[in-house]
Image (cartoon, rainbow, N blue to C red):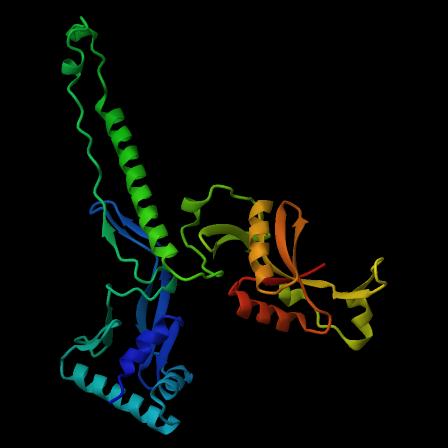
Length: 342
């Protein structure tokens, strides 16, 4: 019998919604990193799973996954899903709990409503896959008594300065928080450096990693991993490609630049559009990204727009800018790349 729950679990790693036709949908929501101040437990970013019984229309995602993975036809895949749904309904109607490995448990309450309890031990966020929660209690430093450290100095009890308990508590609290934060970041960097190179790895805790904040209303910050570095970049807050018109035959002459090469009299014809891999506050970071993209075979340069250094890839005239952007994303994994007019 086909393990349908296994295919649901695998799809949740790369999709935010997986619908089981005729039953309901499992929805994944992003959860930022959390610190439990009472128990000193640190939880990294994750995806929380919820169940929505209203999402029951067949979108083809689960069926196509089963067909391609199990090497069966569409009819058999639909039949296996129907049997899976019937098995769940029978179990929960009889008052038992149905367990979905790595996903959670399904049960029916007293009012006849289906309830879902997610499995907290599994993280479906690929960027932090395998990063488990950990506990880090404050480090308490032993201090020598003041009277003992002042022996032989001739200072009397009246001359010993009094340290207020409130100020001492604040100093200890600040030191403890700094130590815990450093320990948390060290574990995160160890986990991330163990992964394969991923140019589109965007880290969620932006304020903890970088301080070079650039104030702007047009761009919002993000992070990409480039080999052993986390690079801060800026992307447009709105989809710039939506405002770029498609070129017609009558307008084609307006979309090219013709330059004469003095060495060999060769005409260089380029599109008036760039694919922008990212906008950076520092040129040396933009140059680092440019070198990596150049290794992928793209014609790339760094241009300056206002306070940003943009990594720009020229689009060949004969290729549609949207098509070329998709090719660039497939080759580099930089999914936030956008199109900009020169």
